[in-house]
Image (cartoon, rainbow over all chains, first blue to last red; front, side, top):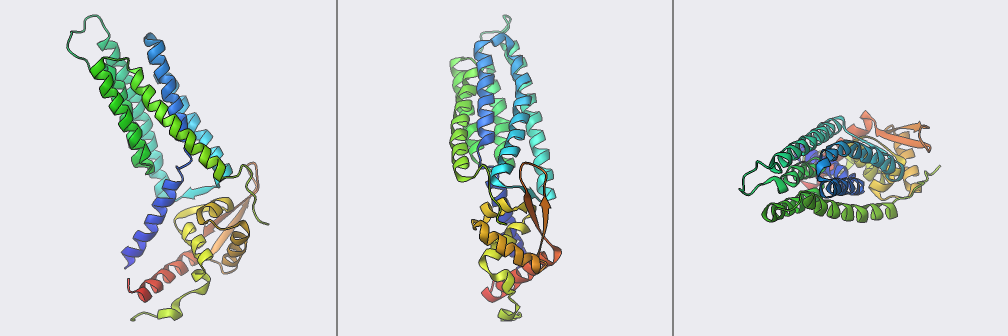
Length: 203
Length: 98
């Protein structure tokens, strides 16, 4: 019975934690960052390394902005220490994995685009999408927000198309970024409607 | 029924709004007034009156935080509140045969 009761509270805690990611700000921010990276890949292929430079400040900025907005409108909550520690470690791992993936993809793209490359079909056009989809999919595990798995699926699907069509690696990022930004914008709008900018406390 | 039965139900905890507040606070370290309002769906007046009662009983502790753009009241469950909630859950589970 004690286990049943503990499981009940654990479920409440998991639901509360999952709800705390429903504002959509991360989706919108990462979606816009992906679109920015895609624009670099498509518009200035030679400067693809810039994508790995703009990604970290974007992620850090979005996380900081989110903390301010959510705390101000949705209220302040501090989850249990073990939850906070695990989330912090997982998000740092996610960031490191994302940056590593981006670096590997840029290197692979540079090699794939070199004149000495053979005529064999290359995975390079889809590699960046595949590698970026992995950490985005992992966000679903960290936050419990399953929509991130859906974003990863969109990027993977678009990456498969990019490989088959030998398209620019920026297009899978464009597809994922557009979906994330649109879903994020809808969630942010819903969140802003549901919360007040200046919540009042009863005296 | 083997347990202590209905008599073991703490009426302070048993009230639905207070139960919602206690359950929310039981799964986090601390939360402010606005978060409690959103998490429980209770009105500001309800939150204020029920948290006052819980504070009087020693189930909940409050801090007034003045940093940031607005005044904030932060609540957390006391060890006594956690114990009472645990006993309440045990009593309810016994009554329901869980």
